[in-house]
Structures are given as C-alpha cells and as structure tokens.
Image 1 (cartoon, helix red, strand yellow):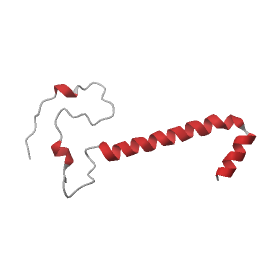
Image 2 (cartoon, helix red, strand yellow):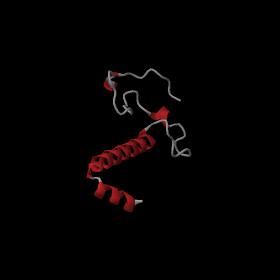
Image 3 (cartoon, helix red, strand yellow):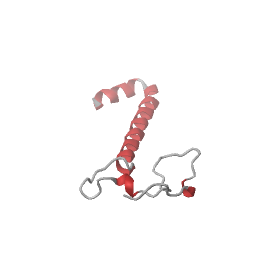
Image 4 (cartoon, helix red, strand yellow):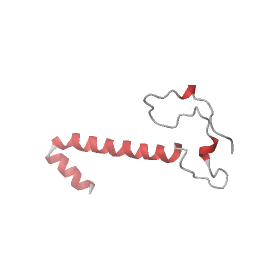
Length: 82
C-alpha cells in the first residue's frame, strides 16, 4: 500500500498537500478521541476504586475542551454529597 502511495506521489506531485491534510486530520481526530477517553469524567476506567468519577468533581472543574460563555471559577456547589 505504501508503495502504491509513493508511486502516486511521484507521478502526481499535486497530491502531496492532499495526503498531508488528510494525515493531519486523522491524527488530530485520534488525539481528540484519546483525550475524550482519558480526561472525560463520564468515562470510568477503574470501576473497582472509583466507580462514579463524576461525583468527585468540584463544581468549578472545567472538563470541556472549550467553553463559550461559561466561567467555571464562579460556580458554587449546589448538589448534595453522596
């Protein structure tokens, strides 16, 4: 497969940006998927020691990648402890 891609790039050098951007997009999507799996509080990898990780978050913990109109530092605790 890599030999075929190499032949196409040699014969058609205009394809180099296409391979570059497709490879970059695939890499960024895999990195974001890994971030979701490792940093999101909805995902529990260790069910024995921490079965409900979302209950141990403070109210001002920002777990979203980008928050548009939310200032997490001003939030107060409005839920009970379990």
